[in-house]
Length: 412
Image 1 (cartoon, rainbow, N blue to C red):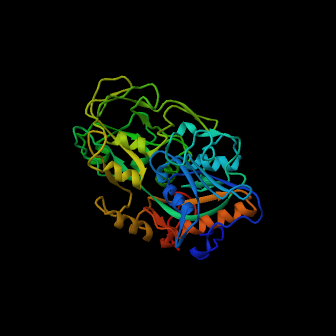
Image 2: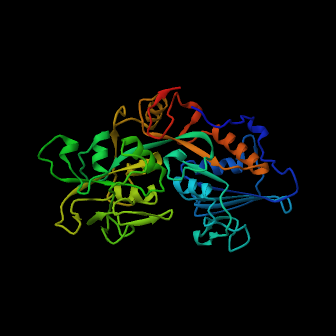
Image 3: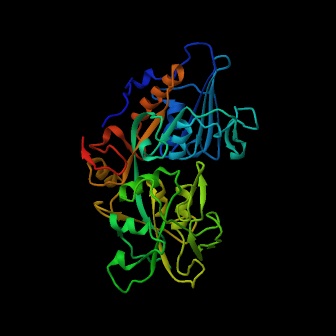
C-alpha cells in the first residue's frame, strides 16, 4: 500500500534532539487510544537510551492508560514539552483537520494543580485554546466525515477487533458466530433479531440486540465498514444504562431495562435515536458481563434477551476474563470467515497477518503541514512506533494489505 515515507533511522540515533534553535517546543498528540501505551513508551524510552524527560505527569494510575499526560525536559528557552489528550479516532482527525481549539490538555507540571507522577485528576485538564499537532486514528481519514484538507498519514501498526456476546441468561448464551448479513441486520434493526437467526432453531424466539460505540470510535468505523453497513451509516445501538440516557437499566449485575440509544450531539453533528453508543470500549465491556434474564425493552414486559457488540482486542480479553465487575464472563464469537471460535491470541494474530481474518484496521498517525522541530518529532515518533512490538500487530509483519477500511484484503 502507499503511505508516507518513513525514515527508518536506527533507534540509537533517535533521541528527539529537535531543538535547532533556542526556543521552547510543545507538541500535542490526540486521537485513538489503541497504541496509547506504545506511544507513551516511545516518548519516554528509546532503546538503547532514554530520551531524557525529567518531568512527567498523568491522570490515573499509569501513563499507559491515562487520558491526559504531559512530558517535559530541559528549561526555557530550550524546553521540550509533549502533551497528550486521548479522545477517539474520529475526534482526533477532526481536531487536526479543523485545528480545533477546544481540546483539553494538562497544564505544565507544577502549575494548575498538576504534580509530577501519577494520580492527577482528569478535572485538571483544561482548554487553553491551542490545537493538536498530531492525531492517531484506527481508521483512514477518508472513512470519517472530516475529509479535507487531506492529512499527511503514516501507517505504523495494525489494530485487532473481535465480535463479542454477553454473559447471557443465567450464564447461558448459545450464540457462537455472526455473519456479515447477520451483522448488517442486527445493527440496523429497530426491534432486534430473534435468536433463531443465529442458532438455526425456529423455537429460539428470544431477542438479540446490537450494542456498540459512538461515532467518535475507530472501532465502530472499522466494524461497520467491515460488515458492509458503511463506516458512517446510521445504525441502531441499544442502551441498558443511565449513562446512555433516560433508562436506569442496570440493577446490580443485571440488565433490567433497555431502549435505543438516545439522540446525541457529537462534533457539532446531531445523531438520531439509536445512532449513538458507548464512548469507550471499557464501558461497553461492562455491559457484556451482565445477566440479561429479565429485561424490559422500551417499557414492555420483562423477558430474556442477548447482546452482541464489537470491541478491540484488549477489551475482548476483558469480556472473557473470569473475574471482575459483573455477573460473569461473556465470550468472543466467530465473525465471518474467522478461522475458529477457539483460537488463541497468537493464532488470531497470525490469521490476520496472513489474510484469513478480516477483523483489523491500520493504526494511522496524521498531521497537517508540520515544519521544523515539530516535523522532526513526528518523523522520529512514527519511526519508533513502526519498530515497536505491542499487543496489536506491527505493520511490517503483515503479509496482506487493504486500501480502505473494510476493503478487500489482498496479498502485498
